[in-house]
Image 1 (cartoon, rainbow, N blue to C red):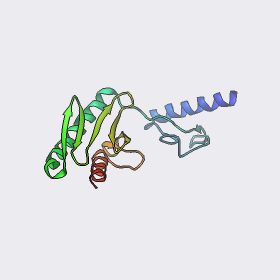
Image 2: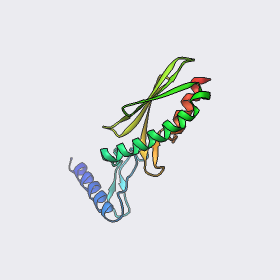
Image 3: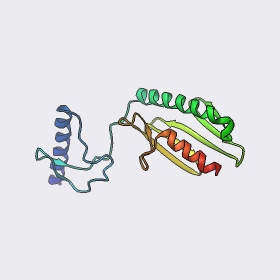
Image 4: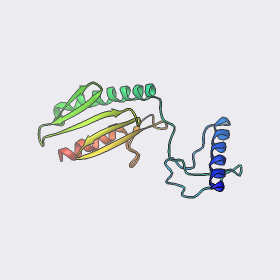
Length: 157
């Protein structure tokens, strides 16, 4: 137990000291890249990091509002030839299809700071990417507009 506590303390200290001198370093974004603790540059232990720095709610909402407006404009421009209708209600975007009948729902989920897309009997959960400056599906690296375009095309085939 003592060895474990030392490992945790070393990790926390390394993160704090590293954060003060140039940004926090993560041993793995979601803990998948590194399975075992290892020695870092300064001799401190690096352990998998299972969380990322979470956006504050105001920043998340600002990002979502901008993404929603851009996506809505793009989809409305494609409505007539696209075979679907776009509706927005209270910050939730609905894409409605007559043939074959379906409804896709794109909504912000504030507690985990994600955008959720319910489409094709699947839930897609997108995270904000500071590098891409947009919401991204972690599994594929697709951006919000790319995921929406893909699921629309799959539905209409």
